Structure formats: C-alpha cells, structure tokens
Amino acid sequence: MDGIKRKLIGLLYPKRIKCCVCGSEAKEAVCSSCLSRLEYIEGRVCFKCGKGIDDEYDANICPDCKKEDKNFDMAFSCFEYKGMGKTIIHKLKYENCKDVAHTLSRLMYQKIAAEGISMDAVVPVPIHKSKEAIRGFNQAQLIAEEIAAASGIPLWNCITRTKVTTDQFKLDKVNRNLNVHNAFCINVLYNNVKNENILLVDDVYTTGSTVDECSRILKQQGVQRIFVITAATGSNT
Image 1: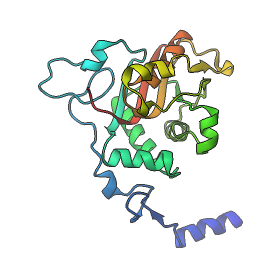
Image 2 (image 1 turned 90 degrees about the vertical axis):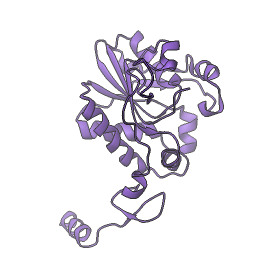
Image 3 (image 1 turned 90 degrees about the horizontal axis):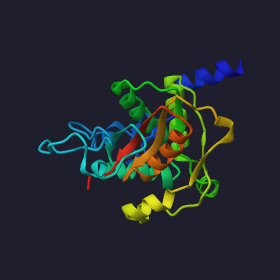
C-alpha cells in the first residue's frame, strides 16, 4: 500500500528537476537547451580514437594515432571537451552533480547503439580508492552502471587502480603516458576474460593514455576486442 501511495504522489506531484548548469526546470540533470550547446562529434572522425578530423585531411587515422599504436581497437565520444562539454563534465566530477552521469550515459549508449558495437561486458576505468574516498564516487563507475542497465550487458569491475597518480590534465602527453604506466592491475575475481569483447567506459578522452593503459592489461589477459566510449574528447594536436 505504501508503495502505491508513493507512486500516486509521484504522479500528482512530480519531483521538480533543475538543470545543474542554468538552473531552469528540466526533465533530467542537464536541460535540453544546455545539451543543444554541446559541440557534438559529427562528420569525419579518426577510425581509431574517434576524434574529429578535417574534411581536407587525406587519411582516416589522425596524426596522433599514426604516431603510436593503441592497445584498444576503437574509441568513440559524444562531444568535444570544451565550452558546455567541459562545464557539464566539471559539474559531475567536481561539484557533486551525480545525476549528470545519467544524462551522459544516455548520450553514450545512443552512440554505441548507433555504431552497432557488440560487447560482452561493460568495464569502468577505475580511480584510486584514496581519490574516490575524497570525491565520494567514481564518475566512470556511475556512467558504466547506467550503460550496463540500459543495454542489459553485465558490468565488470575487473580493473583495479593500484597507484596514486597525478591528475592527467596537469601533464603533457609524454608524462601522461608515464603517469599511468603500471597504475592498474586485473582484479583477481576476473581472471577469465579471454576472448571477450569489452566496452571500456570513461568520462573524457584527451591523449588516450589512461584508457590505453587499461586496454594494455586487458589485452595481456586475452581480451579479444576493446571498444572505448567516453562522453567527451579533446581535439587533435
């Protein structure tokens, strides 16, 4: 009876949601007006990292990906990590607007569904337990949980972050690679991932150092293919 009462109250007096960016009434954490200001990834993209490339560029692999091999197979992102994109990510990570994860996961799931990706498990990129204790959550975990629920694909917390690292945005490309090298290991509860197809989930792709290091240890365990999905991506250098 109490459950029925709560549902009736919810229908009669729906919870008012305010956009975490502009404060207007919205259907979810970010209103449609603010979402429309995102610079969505459209047109030509790199076949490897998913970053946008100019129509005049004469190859399907971007200059960054040509310089070094990646351990993941393909990466996809929804929008550029600038302007409104950067604001929304900041709201989630640093202003405790955890409901933003639902909005981002919806966009990310639409992206992977449109790409027709076949996956056996959804895997979030972990943050170190000390950082998670300070922040109170791992944003990639929140997003991955939503994607797993929407897709019906199991969520695997099969990667553990073993090393405290400097925030990647403070470093140049070379030091980002060094910063995350050997920073992860496979959770012993997931020692049979051979021949699986993994969807690796994170919030932002910049140089790709973090997801590439996670991919490296997954491939060492025999994972067959790794697709990376992030909400935002940086620009090509």
